[in-house]
Image (cartoon, rainbow, N blue to C red; front, top):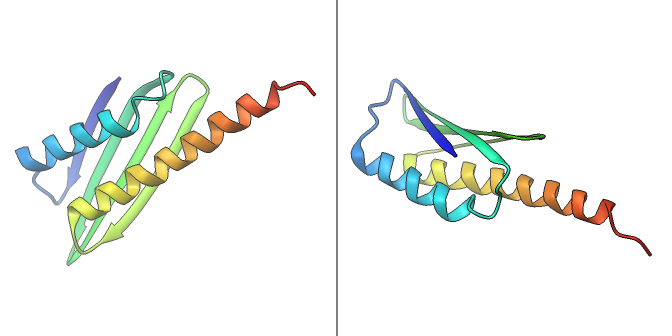
Length: 99
């Protein structure tokens, strides 16, 4: 799994980079079909926005969050993407069950 981090009007510090890598490893380790994770961090005045794009084999999920703290935005966006992945996996698993 490759993780790409992009900053728009934001400098990506080592602390932010380590926080993202640690959070991605913890939350998305249960999904082996994920090939690429793109995280876009943006700062507009006092609003910090984080956007997460997760792509893989037959998987495309997006999560976006805005707040006054960059770390909070990153955590919320990754949680939204994880929730969508779990819902997608549950849908696929339930589809193949027989009565």
